[in-house]
Amino acid sequence: MLRSIQATLRGSPSSSSRLLRRGFSSESTPDRKVAVLGAAGGIGQPLALLMKLNPFVSKLALYDIAGTPGVAADVSHINTRSEVAGYMGEEQLGKALEGSDVVIIPAGVPRKPGMTRDDLFNINAGIVKSLCTAIAKYCPNALVNMISNPVNSTVPIAAEIFKKAGTYDEKKLFGVTTLDVVRAKTFYAGKANVPVMEVNVPVVGGHAGITILPLFSQASPKANNLSDEDIKALTKRTQDGGTEVVEAKAGKGSATLSMAYAGAIFADACLKGLNGVPDVVECSFVQSSITELPFFASKVRLGKNGVEEVLGLGPLSDFEKQGLESLKPELKSSIEKGIMFANQS
Image 1: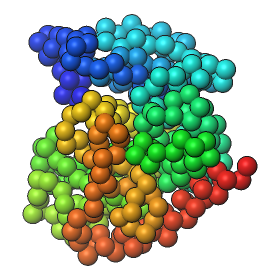
Image 2: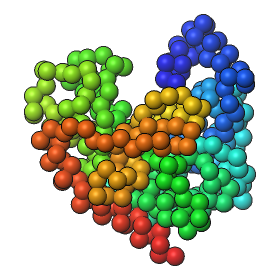
Image 3: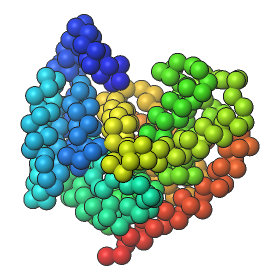
């Protein structure tokens, strides 16, 4: 997807026409509907744009409580395969969701300076609860990509809501932690002086502060020029990446563009998996038994049913082992907070 988008944006005639031909070929590409809930927001708008550029998408449903018709009209003018429809207000949520293969949820309020992801909890938890209730009713078999923070709590909330509705499938619920991977790759490439497009860094744990654990010992290509202090600094920068953006925007926003990019990368992986592309592996926060915690982010193999396999952590450095033990209490607390919220009523 990335290379296709880059080619299109560069305006390369051969590459972009190849992308469009591929997009309009219904014989080779199955019809897939993607719904974006929160499509008029800071993440939702660029995410809607990126999903419109994705050749796997045949229908793009954009939903928000306000402002969606304008976003949908704007995005719909782009000459790619998918048909775009905008839906606004609770009464149109069901129609937006019906028939969806993938539902992406960036809905909620963004983080402001001084706010922790936990401060967002009460507002975003309520939004997620109502949206997941609708998903259970209108598209219970869809793959759900949770972006709304705090992901460490909103994914457990979604699981509990789906359980209550009798529709829960652990293979189809994902916390999108791709931005942590994107940041780890970027920061590592810059420090190690290697080409960023060749870099891979698994990131495990959760999606907030110290629960984010990049495994730089498993990074490729290997960089022998990094000291232990470099690795510690890279780890901290990856963990604090969201705060870095919030502060740089001086109270006027959070990580919206990079998050939209990361969300589009993960949704593309889900679509590839659904379409039977082999060996699609991304990191995601899912129901897991690789630690004692019920949810955990690690590498996941994606397929026609969503999660085909939750992959193990692999060999960890002493620094990473220490980080893993340090993150567990905080992640456990966030998971329990989400479960408790979902079961309050």
